[in-house]
Amino acid sequence: MITEKKLLSHHANGLIFLEICSEEQFIGKEQDALDLLGELYGKCYDGIIMHERNIASSFFDLKTRLAGDVLQKFSNYCVRLAIVGDWSKYPSHSLSAFIMESNRGKIVNFATSIEKAVKLLSRFN
Image (cartoon, rainbow, N blue to C red; front, side, top):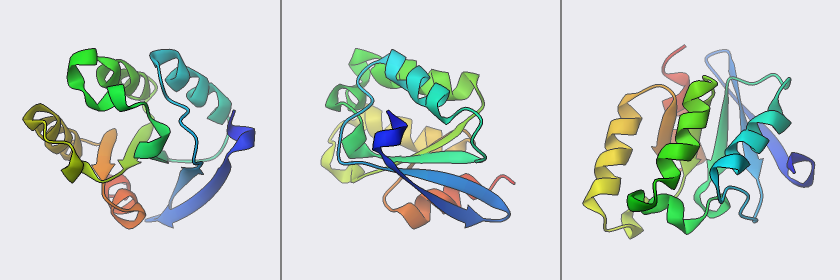
């Protein structure tokens, strides 16, 4: 639950982004994304920032389809999302291409720092 997580806010270009600070993994299946969106419903924010450690490792293996299923929920509800992590540790060319393509868009972005996540999310104001 979000109540067990610390929420930090980041401001840029008149927008507010919530960073979910937790050492725990809380996205392991498609339903977890829906639960997260439900928990954040009604809060004032323009996007969410979460960390790679909060997501099951199977998410980063595109063959499992978990990434597509989870990210589709954010897209369906038009909620901007940035995931912060060290993407160099994943040797998959498919994942690298997926990250590059996602970062061209406005809904889902992958960043290597909080600062870069805020910059990516706030560029479409």
